[in-house]
Length: 252
Image (cartoon, rainbow, N blue to C red; front, side, top):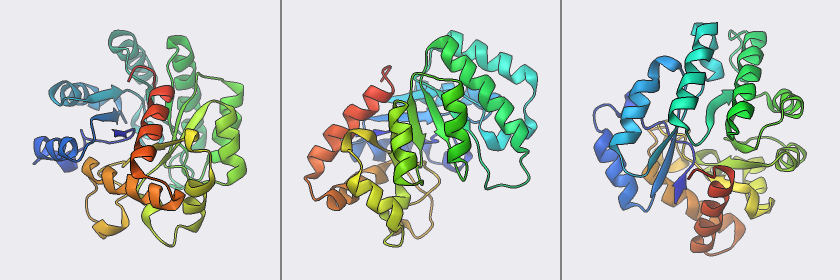
């Protein structure tokens, strides 16, 4: 299995990161994509993925961190992309859920990072919370080589638009709640070739964790939920979603 979105470098794992990683491997999660959120964290992110087998980095400035970012941070990111050749630029995008984060500033950093992704011919890991249509608009204007729309929670029409642009859609803990009817319907009916699995650990915990800390080992049960929704063997779901992840992120 491939966890296409896991913040293993987060402070929530400082006390037991090695054990969390070992548990993921034991659960069959052989690769983890660890996205960046701010340039100050890039060295620690690199140290994390270098230390833990199967972990790979993406580097980017998260929309919730743009208020602390400056123009110089884009130059730093450019240097890291050139030196490290990560699997993707990310986590980047827009977040219109948190009202105090200036949307114009978010858009500026998003567009500049899309330009970097184009320059380095890298896919992107997208944050699209409450901002799917604005993200799609900017992707049409600044086309990149695809990637993953992380934690997808839109309509079927919006899903189809991402797919047309060459993106896979990330499904994880939100899909495990019985009340998440739209997400579960999408997970059951979208082309399986368009879906990748993720945890977003330590965030978006699945239903069985009762709002506790999420971890990459939970991907095994998340895969089982997707298999149940689609009424197919879990081995087939794992094989196809892993192939999808490699298609979205060729450096895997």
